[in-house]
Image (cartoon, rainbow over the protein chains, first blue to last red):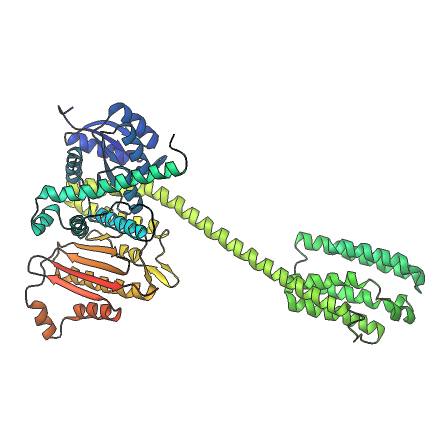
Length: 219
Length: 360
């Protein structure tokens, strides 16, 4: 699998856009092994082709990108999901991250940015924007507020360093700039961001499992 | 329904009292008029053309006229001893009609008119309410039916308004989805391709990109109304400033503040953004971050422009030219909050604006 190009599946319900993205990626040396227009077709194809990276739109023919992310990762756990979405679809991007997406890029990004983002995603690095950092930060704060008033076990929390890094990202500093401000390596900064995504996913899974047990769905 | 029952009652009354009347044939003739008028009213109200002031006034006139004919067909003595001829119950139809159409006041007035006709017939007014409660009943019917009709009408209007609103929201969602699936995607694609090709096409791409963002804002405007009475979502307000050069990061959930506080904070952010636009340089971008810390709300406005050289701000203040900075600090003071500015040559400017949440 390490031989040859990175395999990619493009999921988008708009044919013109989907084909354009697929063509660009193929032109940049990726191996586009499948395209899909909805949750169902994405799941079926991912199960067969096991793509390294899934480029995922948030609005699909038969559901949303968060749902598709969860279903694709269920049948193809080694895949990594990069959300490529319009900038205004806020809450569902957060849902996609909770469902396991590790990257987010807006559709106005250039072809070069897209290629770099797919590379980074394939290498297991997080791809993020200031907007996404703001959402993730807000989500942790919400979890902390909710936990403060209840006896329920606490959800995921951020370390001080992670909060610091997320705030810088949300204020538009690049990983490199943050690294130099905090005297960290570029890679460590990325790891911090990735950790915040990952904890949200785990938290989400714990939440789902607790819900399932409470409602007797854990057969 | 009431009309039919009152007709049956009037028929019973007619059969029972007819032998006592002076002019029996005339009595039956007038009764036929009553039945025909009742039928006409029933049709008129059911079909809708009777639900107009003219028809209801006509009904009142007919009722009063029929009541007055008692004078012609019965002896004075009978009139004094009995209720007026077409029965008070039937006469109440007019009261009900007026109450339904014009409301409680008109209903009660009609009741008074009907009773006045009866009183005119007998030549005196029943003051003794304990023995003759007809006037009270007539007034009560007018009031109750009128108020019920008014309430029903209002409820109906509200319902219609709600139905219209939900229809327009649905329509907007449908449109939004269609625009999103078609036009926006194509515009986004044009913007992307155009930028790659460069040259003049890049300018076209910029235009397509601008239109794409404008459309996106338009179709999403319907979902988030930032203002709800006394509170406003500062996040929704800030998102309005998002553009190619301004990145706005907000939590997924609304961040509610007292409306006046939100407006003032938003105005301060706009000051800072405008300042960045004029001073940070042509290629600078600005970043807005909104954080809800529970007991306070913080908005950071950062630009990656040239920044303000050391001493430059103090100099400006000294010369009385620090208009915008002063206005931002002034607004935050007024809100009982803080405004902190950090800047340096080459490192851009960053405002951190914090407002406390009130006791609410």
